[in-house]
Image 1: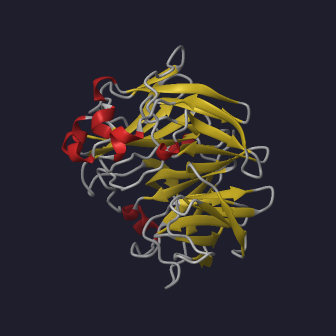
Image 2 (image 1 turned 90 degrees about the vertical axis):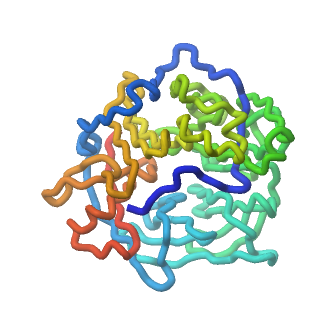
Amino acid sequence: MKKLPIILYILVFLILSCTKSNDKGNLQTLKVYENIDKQKRSFLMDQMAGYKEIIKLETTDSSLISNVNIKFTTLQYICLLDNNMIFFFDQTGKFKFKINSKGEGPNEYNSISNVVYNSIDSTFYIHDMFKKKMLEYQLNGRYLGEITIDNIGSIIDLDNNFYVVSYSPYANKSKLVGILDHSFNIMNEFIGTNFNNENYADRGYILINDFIQSNHTKCIKPISSDTIYKIYPNKVQPYFFIEKGRLAIPIEILSDVSQNNKFKNYITNDYGLIINNLYFMTFYYNNKLYQDIWDIETSKLLYRNIASSVNDKYGAPIHLNDEIINVWPIFVDSQSVYCKIDERDQLLLKTNIEENDILLKIKVEK
């Protein structure tokens, strides 16, 4: 498999919330810290999988990618972000086109912070946080124009023609989340924050806190609270809580890159996605990669894989072509889950592992 970094170093990440209360209340609680060193491999992905389809991403001189980072999907396309370029493959894996407009010109971006799809207009936006603008494109890649927009750390589409944004740490906002209308005007704001950017900007390290992908609603997890929230146009509602106990990293260490030698003593870089009532969570602890599957409704750990080297198994098992292979979800939309197939298991599909990655698309019934 391609080795994942133990610690993510990025000069400017997207958002940081310092809400000290965790809003735990009576939420379902996933006690991640319990039995932290115990593997648990009784879960098969077949339990949630319906129709399965192998997607071999076509490899050409123009479509070679280093990392499968899916930003959105449509009935026609799979849109990927890699090395500041946007790649479009069709749903069979055939490469269609890419957007490579990095530069200082009026129709160009300095870097791609986010990519957001507008299903109502069948357009998409490339968000450049540094240039404080969004470039609009038709779904066929034709450039339409740009919109000036400030203070945004991250943005996703929301149902009913709305967008939801997390504000940049430099926005001096009292709220973390904003709901925007189709014209990017603020409609509502939620989740209070007492973030003091001077405390952390001087250290040159701002941490990412992106939205959580789900097949039934949009979610976000403020980094210091470990509460996952559901997002609606008129409210933000606590959903469930991740309890890390003594392994929860103090914010003063988390935000200071000079203390990264202490990271291994805590749970770090945790992120995930939600499929029905299951939370697929990836994190690092003690220089090891953890992959958990939790039942949100019962707070029960169903599966845990721990990998400390590239020789260890990656992902969770699933039956495919009369074999048991390992996959892990990397993107979910309202209809399907896209998983990356472990590179060693690609040999079972008689495919050269030096080519672009192979995906497994799973149809999941709600």
